[in-house]
Each structure stands twice: as C-alpha cells, then as structure tokens.
Length: 372
Ligand SMILES: NC(=O)c1ccc[n+]([C@@H]2O[C@H](COP(=O)([O-])OP(=O)(O)OC[C@H]3O[C@@H](n4cnc5c(N)ncnc54)[C@H](O)[C@@H]3O)[C@@H](O)[C@H]2O)c1
Image (cartoon, rainbow, N blue to C red; front, top):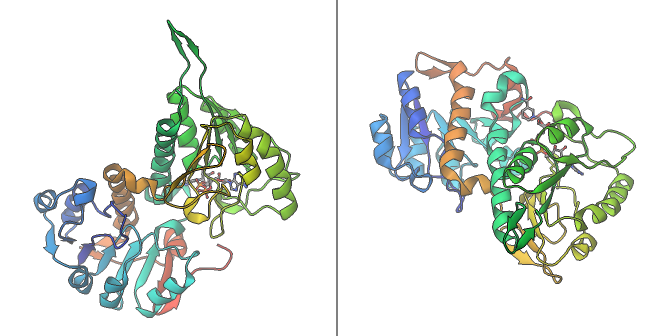
C-alpha cells in the first residue's frame, strides 16, 4: 500500500500532512510512504529528513495521486490530484463537506473513499485524532501573539521608575478550543482577561484559566449535540449584539472565535461596536474564513477602522506555525488510520463510529448525514 503526501494545493498552505516522524511509524507497519518532492519544505521538513525516515518520492501531484492508495493531505486535493486519483483509493484531509457540497459531489464522482478530518466525532476515544482541536489550539495561541504585536500597549501590568502601566484588557468571544487557548495565552502574557460563550457549560473552564466569564441571559442554553453551539434566533442575536457593544468597548483587545459548524459565523462585533472601541484597540477575528465575527473584517487583511481600531482578518493561523501544526496534524492522521491498518493494508471499518462520522463519500455516493 502506498500512502501519498502531496505538496498542498492551496497557495498559502505551509503545512504538510505527514511529518518524517510519522513516516517512520508507518514504515514500521509495512506501508510505503511516497512524498511529493518539497512537500515539507515550508514546514521546515526538507526532503532529506523524509529520505532518512524511509520515504520514496514523486515529482508532481498527478504522478503521486495516480500511484496512491491513501492520499493524505491537509486541505482538499486540487483538480490535478482529483483527476488522477484511482477509484477505490482513500482521500484524507480537511475536505469542508458541509461548506462545499459541490466539491463533495466531485469526490463521490471520482469514486474515492473520502475521510473528512472535520467530521471525526468528538468522542473521548477520538481525541487523539481530533485535528480540529489540534489546529484550533494553535490558532488561539497565535491570535494572542498577533494581538499583542498590533496593540500599541503592554499586555502585562508594569511597575517602572517612570510610573505604573496598567495591564491590557482582553475579551475572548467563543470559548471552544481556540478561545480557551487564547484565554490561557493572554493570561500568561499578563493581561486581564474575560471570556464569553453562548454555551453556559464553559463558564467553569474559563474561570479555571484565571479569566472572568461574562454572563448574558439568552433565555435558553445554546448547546446542540456533540458539544457544538446551535444557531441563535434573530431576536436572541439582536439582544446579544446590543449588550456586546458595551462589553467590547471596555476592552483593548477582542479575540473572536465563535463558529457554528456548517454555517456562516455569527456577527458579534457590529460596526457600532467597533465605533465604540478606543483608538488603538485590536480585534483578531479567527472566524474570518467563515464570514467573520466582526462586521468590518476583511479575510486575509489587516485593516484600520475610521476610529483607529486594528482589525486582523488573517485566515489559516495554524498554517503560520507550520512545523508544530504539521507535527500535530500528522499524529492525528496516524491515530485515525492505524487502527484500520493490518499487514500493511488499510481496511476502514464502516461500523466504527469514527468512520460513520468521517467518511463523507464512498462507492460513488455522498455519505454526509443531514443534520450533522
Ligand atoms: N473529544 C471531545 O470530547 C472534544 C474534543 C474537542 C472539542 N470538544 C468540545 O467541543 C466544543 C466545540 O469546540 P470547538 O472549539 O470546535 O468549537 P467551534 O470552533 O465550533 O466554536 C467555537 C466556540 O464558539 C462558540 N459560539 C458559537 N456561537 C457563538 C455566539 N453567538 N456567541 C458566543 N460564542 C459562540 C461555541 O459555543 C464554541 O465554544 C468545545 O466544548 C470543546 O471542548 C470535545
């Protein structure tokens, strides 16, 4: 069996799906790992390290895809790979099945078995495979570093001969994996931090990190199944926005991470809220790719509002820390595939709960269950 590792198709993607450490582990299971030349360069894993780990090489994506039994990527395979993949082969990656049904249809038509990393169920047994979490963790950390470098102030309180500097106030909206890491990182840098989420269950987690939890009465909890949020009603959203303006204006930095799977991100920072912020304040919008939690966010750009607020819309923050992001992703992939590997071959157990969630196309059909 050949496990193939491509050069990522997206132009700004610096991560690589498998790092040399994982290649070594797969080789021990009797698997051939074929890497597209240069695939790991941007993540600081040169070909020589793959060679030492026992990988073989392909020059181009097409040749790689033609030979592959399991095509392991970070993002979705591009057109050249899709055209060359053999029916019956397996494709693994962040395939965005809920956000782009047309692409999912193309995977089905290519008659490949497609495993979408974002659809792995969030059950205890699958934690080691959870690439959404491993990558969100990085995004939360990096968001704070971007905020700290854009803010014209210190994060920590400083007592100096020239007087005392008060600590920065940081608000984190959305306290999932990225938000909790942002809270922890901002605390480590000495800021005064508060967090907010529609799911009341995260209150204790936020407090245990040394932050305060903002409370707003929605009238009902907004947790759907599986630990995810459900969409708020228009009335709830309007009330939440008005209350939010006051909270936002009281902070120097607002980091937003609020996502609802498969839907446009909720707007939590309206234009009015930006207008109420102090000049020099910073918004880092981790939901930029999903439409943005801030009304003024421009994906992949940093802009300054009329009243001097910096709004950072950088997407793919895990890709800006490609070495560790790839290392963690690669371990997630190994944890996903290794239970199904026997004698150097992959046999996906379709009765396994992980496969039931993650296999989104196979045998020519789209397999995403509605409501997931
Ligand atoms: N194996 C496991 O048990 C496991 C693994 C990973 C994550 N989880 C849990 O799954 C949950 C989701 O994590 P995630 O980071 O992927 O979430 P996510 O990226 O889908 O969303 C980020 C956060 O935004 C919040 N949010 C959505 N709409 C909002 C709004 N209008 N206002 C404020 N906040 C809003 C969500 O509640 C969530 O906490 C978390 O509770 C996490 O701990 C469980």
